[in-house]
Length: 223
Ligand SMILES: *Cc1c(COP(=O)(O)O)cnc(C)c1O
Image 1 (cartoon, rainbow, N blue to C red):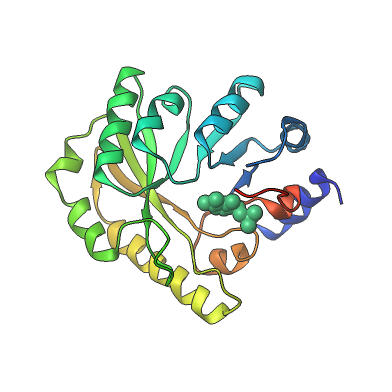
Image 2 (cartoon, rainbow, N blue to C red):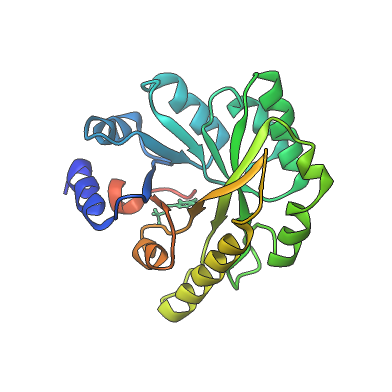
């Protein structure tokens, strides 16, 4: 099936109010343009260099999301244009995003990555760290970032019950912190769900799904 057919099939399964991020990592510009021609405007990448070069060569009304682990020393390359950073996992990183956003006279929207999976390899705040971080004065002092949501990745397993529980736990945290509203903190976006589990994630309250291989086909090389 073609990219545009895949896209319309997936869109048919996604309710209004859920944003589809088309994850185009490792895929060529032609593939992105095919999705673009079909109306898709939100794309996600997980490598700074690839994101920057695609931004430079593709239409300027694309909303680019950085979905992968981001190193502080690379923030400067995406700060001029990135529309959402999904995987903020430390105060150090957030401080750097704030600094580069200020240099570009803008505010950069961010999601805090929360560690919900059993695997120890995945990045993110624990539920406890999140609570103290959200209430910290350090966070309040950053005027050029806005925390607009949370992001999480479930364990890579066939065990649907486990995945459901992990997503459900993140939704509980999201609801818990949604009552807090400050100038740079207001939760609206809950980014969870990928090709294999996005329907489960939506059932559990996700309103932003990051779907790659179901749109563009399997990735051929390691990411
Ligand atoms: C690659 C990636 C996705 C998309 O994965 P698919 O299984 O291809 O849909 C989603 N989120 C993140 C953070 C990714 O790195």
